[in-house]
Length: 126
Image 1 (cartoon, rainbow, N blue to C red):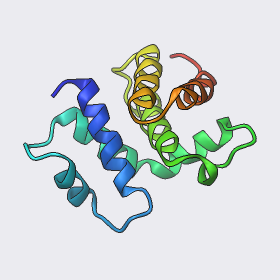
Image 2 (cartoon, one colour):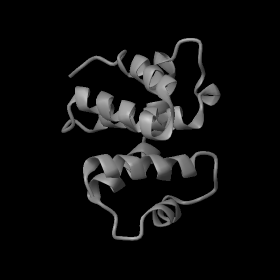
Image 3 (cartoon, rainbow, N blue to C red):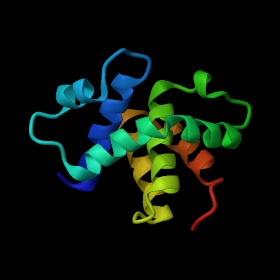
Image 4 (cartoon, helix red, strand yellow):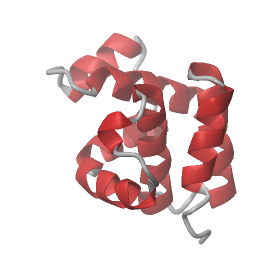
């Protein structure tokens, strides 16, 4: 599984987990049949485990929006991207931004990509 596909599967998994009673393992098993890719599993578990810290940082970057008001797909993509920016130093900042925009094109619309880009551009490049 390539990293792009792992990110797409992570969006699908985290989208399912948002406001449901599913466990992480149940959500993972629902999305993928084969053994989980390490990067995919890191994205899913890392985002869930650090959700509180991610949401706190993310809330500080949103202007005139609250996390609860965000469309579910944008919120999910932003959480994964912020997880990568804060907790995964092996992925360059620019790659995280580009991947988040591509995920929005796949699962959202053009406005989604612009919105997510605007929020993520407020994070300083490391």
